[in-house]
Amino acid sequence: MGTDGPTVQDRAFGVLFGFWSSQALLAAVKLGIADHLADGPRTAGELAAAMGAHEPSLARLLRALATLEAVTSEGGRYGLTEFGRALVKGAPGSMRSMILGVMSEDHRRAWAELPHSVRTGETAFDRVYGMPVFEYYARHPDVSADFNDAMTAGSAAVEAAVREAFDFSPFGRIVDVGGGNGGLLAAALEAAPKAAGVLLGTPAGLKGAADLLRARGVSERCEVVPGDFFESVPRGGDLYMLKWILHDWDDRRAGAILRNCREAAAKGSRLLVIEAVLPDGDAPSPGRLGDLNMMAMTGGRERSAAEYRAMIEAAGFVDVRARETRSPCGLVEAVAG
Image (cartoon, rainbow, N blue to C red):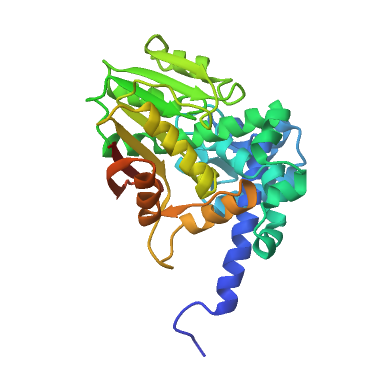
């Protein structure tokens, strides 16, 4: 007898298959399958010879990747789909680094301790590694570099959407607070060719900034400032940007960052917060899963528009407005009062 839709068991299997799917993509990225297919389709045997892989096992992974629509399969030859091309190292819009970062060992081990966070309110990462995540990254430059690469890839994925939704051209001096390698600041300066930029970050976070800003052709208009946004923020900005910063922290510490931005900003300067903005109440949203990631990794949280409004107004900003973009990130704008 038929049913009107998926059963609860079907839905459970769907969630489990999601885990398997992400692990298959991680294996493909680590093996460099997309890189080996970048120049055109190959058979499993040709790929195995090029990669030094076990051909029957590689063929099984390729068939799974075809199910995920990452590769095409025709006449025994495998090629890349548009999705698969996003797994190629260094390709425009590549998500390879994001997959490696989000699926890294430190993330997986922290998520395994999510029940501990739910029981206690403590951060799972701290329980696993005995220290907060950013302290761990500071002590492990190789892991920090992978994280920075992931954030750069993630930033590139939302840059175009932010540029479509926000006009950077009126601003003469744009300060990116905690901007990592500077991908978003580069996009803002490209959109505002007369503007100067300031990139604030920790020494570890800024490690790849000089090369990225030079490659994007904006390094001569950009000042790179090592520092701590809990201590102070560079003054004199017409626009202060915070992308994927506030969600890393609890309300007290996120509020401290916002107050430092307000102290640095002249009256009338603008604030632009780029985060996943949750819907009110219990409405479904992909940001709900990101919220669990913050619980496991940093002790921070994703927030609703109302929660951002209250926090930003408490820091001394006015005219707070939130709106969506075509990316998973929303924009929260405000004016220094």
